[in-house]
Amino acid sequence: MSCIIKTINLSRQFKSGHETVDALKDVNIEIQEGTLTMLRGRSGSGKTTLINLLGALDKPTKGYIYFGGEEITQLPEAKRDLLRRNKMGFVFQSIALMPLMSAYENVEFALRIAGYGKNRMKARVEECLSIVNLAGRMHHRPQELSGGEQQRVAIARAIAHRPKVIFADEPTAELDTGMGRQVIRLLKNLTGREGLTVVLTTHDPELLELADCVYTLEDGMITE
Ligand SMILES: Nc1ncnc2c1ncn2[C@@H]1O[C@H](COP(=O)(O)OP(=O)(O)OP(=O)(O)O)[C@@H](O)[C@H]1O
Ligand SMILES: [Mg+2]
Image (cartoon, rainbow, N blue to C red; front, side):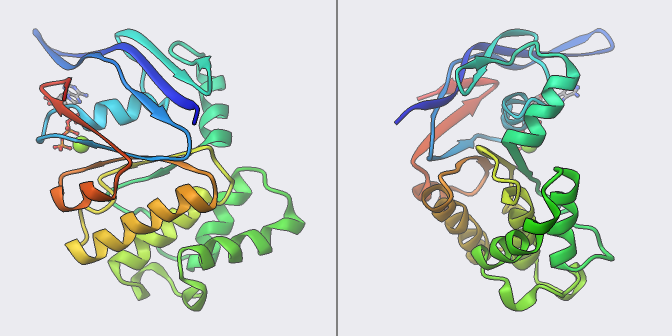
């Protein structure tokens, strides 16, 4: 197995007024390709801050981030944009599908933005919706789907352009435990099936057993 993400002494401070918050302090982690890694910790422990840094949505105050062997810590915005668009996919807690578009159209829209070839589009949209077991719901709009089904559409949308890594910040927070488990199982299966790496944050201790690797955060630091 090879390491796809690595951080060295990764730190992030936030300044608001006269106060400084050390949201992350000297975080050193390694994420192996093709695995499901979970970040856990109490509210305010730094999970979102860390996942945003790994996903190149934010820049650290100190330290280094490597993605696929390349240092991405201080890449200019245009390059970070490309990196996110080509190599990464994102799933969020609030599902944020386009409300007037069907499941099919939501995934197709994301592929169009990614510049996916027109003639391959239909097959890929259908394939991704089948992977998340929604072949029978393709033409439903979000409001005609359950919460878990909506989150599965969001996953289909996130994987459609074949990213290397999916980042998911509390993807199960708005689902009951049973549905949350289904969604995590699906992400776990994707790590085998599409060779994907998945990094997610969770509050739910019952879901941790599905992880290949778990990192615990406490006050911005990794504890063992
Ligand atoms: N933009 C910001 N400005 C100032 N402080 C921030 C900012 N974003 C986060 N923080 C602080 O950094 C710390 C870590 O926040 P973070 O959102 O990473 O926690 P979390 O583990 O994701 O929490 P939760 O489980 O509630 O989502 C918190 O103390 C938070 O108040
Ligand atoms: Mg958070």
